[in-house]
Length: 118
Length: 111
Image (tube, rainbow over all chains, first blue to last red; front, top):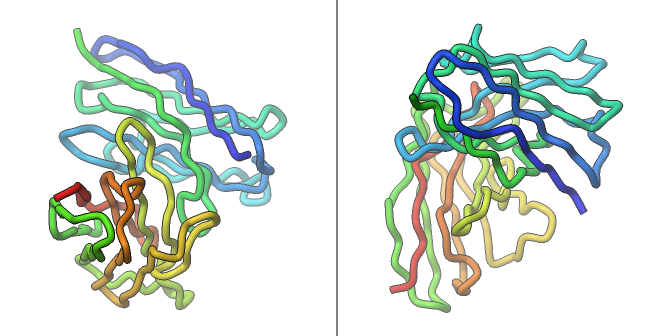
C-alpha cells in the first residue's frame, strides 16, 4: 500500500522558518518525481514545488510565490521529502501535502497544517 | 499561469443519477510531446485529494468505470454515471502541461 506521511507543521510567527518532512512507503521513492501542494480556503489548491530524480541532478522548480523562500529536497536513502520554509507570511498558511508524481499527482499524503500568525 | 475554470460550483444530484462537471483552461493543454496533461481529483470530506482520471481520460488504479473523462484543447468534462454515496465530495480539475494549476472545485452533494 502506498503511503505518504507529512509532519513538521504547526504555528509559526511571521518571518519565521519551518521545515516539513514527508516519509514515503509502498513504492520506489527514488523513481518518482515528488512535489508539495498546499491548500487554503483563500487560494484553494496551489502547487508549491517539485523535485526530480538523481538522474536529473535533483532538479527543482518552484511557484513564483515561494521562489527564494522555500527549498525542496529529498533523501532517497530514507524515502523522505522535505520542504524548508523561510520568511513565512500569513499567506503561507494552509495544509501542505506531499505528492508523488506519475503522469499526474498520483499519490497524496494526509497533509500537515501550517499556520503563520503572531 | 493557466487559469482553470470549473462549472458548476455545486452539483446537487440524486443517487443513481448521472453527473457532469466542466473544466475550461485559459490556454491549450496540449504539450509539445502531444500529450494533454489534464487530470481530475476527488477530495472527500476530511481527506486529501485523490487522483481519479489522468491525461484527460485514463482512470487511475482502482477507480470505478462509472467515472469517465473526455475533452481536448481547452474544454474538458468529467462524467459520473450512476452516482453513489461514496462519490460525494469536491472534484478538482488540474493541469500539468504548464506550471501546475487547479480549478476551484465542484461540490457534488445529495439533492
